[in-house]
Amino acid sequence: MGLRYDHVNNIFIYDEKMSGLMPNLMWHLTSECNLHCSFCFSKSGSQRKRIRIEDFKYYIKIFKNLGVQKVDISGGEPLLFDNLDLLCSLLSESKIFATITTSAFADDSQLEWLINNEKRFSRIILSLDAPYEDMHDSIRGQKGCFKKLLSLAKQLVLVSDRVRINTVCTDAISDKDTLNDFFSIITSMSLREWCLIQPLISNGMKDVFDTVVSIIDQMDITKVKIITRPNNIYSEYWVLEEDGMMFQRNQENNKYNIFSENQLQDLYKALRTDKGDENDGTEH
Image (cartoon, rainbow, N blue to C red):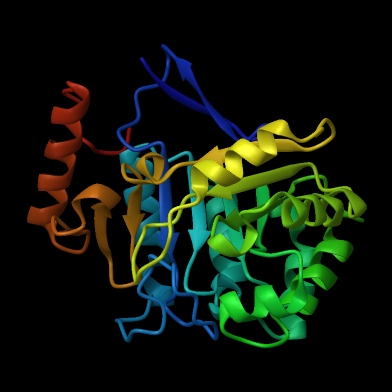
């Protein structure tokens, strides 16, 4: 029995007819990012080999071989990726769904592209970490983030009902008054989903995830779907970096280069072992 992606509700459902090795994949298209978030688990800002446009079809072939149904497009800031439009077209043509996560800190033309192409995504996920301008901008390490994100959110909800807010739970929002103000912002824009994320604790951060979730549970929230993401959920996500290295989040030191035939076969073997599946990992 495998998993089938329900793109309307953005969930995976057990389905005895499905047998893919890797139904979901997080793809860090670029490490380029103008922000400096202390809790970020990607290697944003570091220099890596960039994805070449001539390799796009090869990536798609690998995804089909692995049984990928949904790609979570991330970064860095994915809107800064030069060939995002072409890549999204290829994913759609291959019947692979996509979500995209953005801080909205991009050029106006890139934000306009997202608004005009919102139907390409099962979810457009906006990263908002505080209900106040100064607080959010401080967390993100760049002035102007808050205004740009709220402006984008207000435009997106006019054309899409698939917009979600992602919030990394930090000490800055761990009291009831702040969370009430946060909820007010979300409801004022008619957003339907709010995802609370437990960060990977580092740099002396205080883990307040359980506190935040407990306060939210006690609030009168009916029109917004609350999603909670403890970091152990993300630990098993498969990640593809822009240099072609693929790994499971909880095994970051065990990476597979998808441009190496030997390592690619090792990846198929490891996935088949995990699933007890004798599928040979090739496209049928």
